[in-house]
Image (cartoon, rainbow, N blue to C red):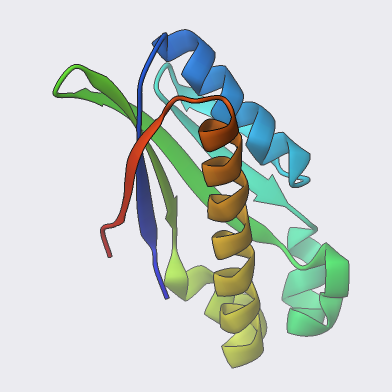
Length: 126
């Protein structure tokens, strides 16, 4: 259950950030900037998830983050998730669902940056 996945990206950093955000939106997430280099990614209904837990279905609330930084002359996009919050909303089923959705999101970002030719490397940090 990865909680942080990083992507090393080449090329123009503004274009790369935009590509990552486009991939995130294509997975149904809303992007709320929390700073110039970070954003909160949400999907679903927090209220329904609190009331119904994992039974909220497609409305199960997911909250992830994306942060950008520079390292060794290239852009790093860091996807992260809070493992405990999904478990609080949906128990073990919710935690498992959040883990699967996080991996789908990371796969979508990886596919988008690879297709664009800017992918350098990825790594699971924790």
